[in-house]
Each structure stands twice: as structure tokens, then as C-alpha cells.
Length: 360
Picture 1: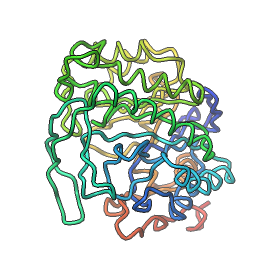
Picture 2 (picture 1 turned 60 degrees about the vertical axis):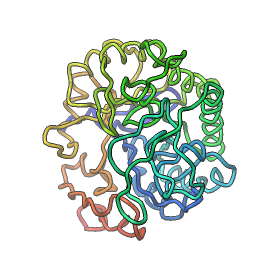
Picture 3 (picture 1 turned 90 degrees about the vertical axis):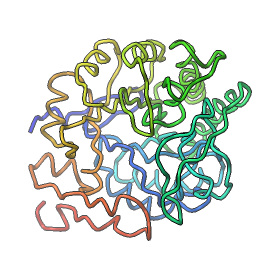
């Protein structure tokens, strides 16, 4: 195993003890009102050995919610509920940032208390289904945001980032990928606007850059990361002009703490973005055949220079002490997909650590 994976690295104001990052993964274990729970504090504290934890997606507003029992950061009560989580992670020497994720057209009114209609850049219904209390549900038609409402959504992200810092987070990550609202503005098929937020690439990146700049102004660029997923068709996305789109977006970024890239299977494009971006990159690799990211995959990304740190997804669910397992060469537990989402809120402690199995 490459020792580089266990070397410290600095991302803006964040001094990581190693380069193993926990990727954001939805767990659906908040209350119906979006409050963080004791289960979440235990879950994240168990994984504090990561150089950095990026939380599950957190809605920055009521209309930003897309899933049931997902956490929020748009009220003081929600911010207060996160304090035991951040305190638990810090008590074990970890760092944690909140991922701000506005779902846009992805969601269903039956999944959240407000029952609101989803919003989007344009009134284009997503293909696919949400999983509601009664089973699969077709995504409903969203409502197109007005220019005035876009300005309010920008402010909501900044307000949410400020609440995150008050809650004890070390920073935030802005989700601009995976088919959620910022990505919906970037993509050709979901953005059919004819005003200053649609049409040309310059216009389609405008909303994302306004959100990023507003958050940076509010809490400092050195506490902000941005996640993108070039070429990712998830949630019915068609970008159309991926290379030019992300070249323009990356060129417009302020000096943020890190750029987090979900690789879409095109390492040449990642290398091009690495050459363009002079800051630090967290890479979430995309191994062939959909297998989990391994230590060898992470080491290769670091050694070739396309990443400064590597984000692990499902491997972190199954192995709460993943960095130690990677460092010692211990076997990795295989993730049980049935435990990925909350349901009856069980299973989050089912995976033993090395110490618990006497292999430390």
C-alpha cells in the first residue's frame, strides 16, 4: 500500500491527518423535521479516523428536500441538533463538513412534511421514480424557478452554510452534481430557460457560480468544497457539452478549499481538469464493474497526481475503521446494500472494527 494515502494534506483551512476521505452517502436517519439524531452522531464518530468526513446531503431549505428523513440545515433547531454530531467527531480527532444538497426536481411531495411541489430550472419532469411510503412513485412535474426565486435559493445556501459553522462543522461542500439542482442548471436537457440562466454555457453555469460565491463570501472560501460529477447521467441528466461545460465552470471557481470530482469512468477528462485546476482535488474514483473503491485504486490516483485525497463510499459503511484497515492491510468487510438506507434505523453498528474482532 502506498504510504502517500496516510500522509497529511491541507485543503484550504482543513488540515487532514490522512488522505482517506469519507464520501457523502444518504442514510435517511434524521427525524421527519430534518433533525440530526443520536444514531447519526454514533455513525459519524465511528468513522472519525477519516482524514475528512463529508456528510450525507443536507437540504438548505424546505424546498431543497428530496428524500424522506433526510437532514436539514435551514433552522436553528436543525443546527443545534447537529452539534452532538460534530462534537462526537471532533472528540475523536476527526474533521467533518456538511454537504449542502438542494434536490431540485428529484423528490416527491409524499416524502416530506411540507408536501411541496419540487422546483427546477425548467418544468421538465425527471424520468425515474422516488421510493415513497407506499412504494415506487413517478417523479412529478417540477415548477420552474423565477429569477427572484433563484436569488432566494442562492441566499438559502449561504444562510445554510452559516448555520453549518454555528453547528460546529469545519466547512461545507456544495453539491453541484448527481442530477440535483445545481447540476440541473448545468445540463442541457433540464435547463431550457431563455433568460440569463439558460442557453449558453456561460448562462448555465451562472446559478452554480452564484451559489458558490455567496457561500464563500459568507464563511470563507477556505472552508468550502464543491462536488461535481462530469458525464454522470444519474437522475436523468444529459449535459450535452461536458468538456466545455466543466472547463468553464472550473475556470469560474473562486479559490475554494477543494474540488471534489465524482469520476464518470473517463480518466482523461479528470486529468484535463486536474491540469486546469491549480487547487486541491478530492477524487471519488469509478472502478470498472461498479466495485467498491479499494486502497490500490486510491493509491494509483494519488501516485499519478490526479488527486490530492481520495473519497471512499460504500467501503466506509462496511468498515467504520477503514483507514486503519487500509494501513494494516486487514481484510475489508463487504457492504450490505440493505443497510445503506435508514428504514428501521438498524444496522449502523453491525460492522465490527478491527479492535472489536481482536485483530488490531
